[in-house]
Image (cartoon, rainbow, N blue to C red; front, top):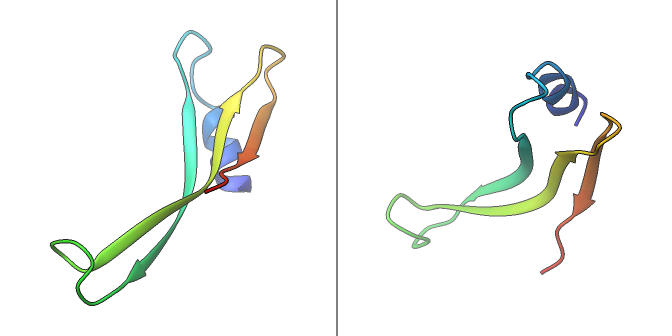
Length: 58
């Protein structure tokens, strides 16, 4: 989370910035290459310039 936060803060302010943290698992028979991906957190920058994380609920 800290690395994503630093990267997002380093981006220019006039660009729309979104990020995500995903959990990837190799699973036999899942998709073409066997990897399944599940998004755990989404990140965005609020108007004050702080990076906010929200947990993705399935």
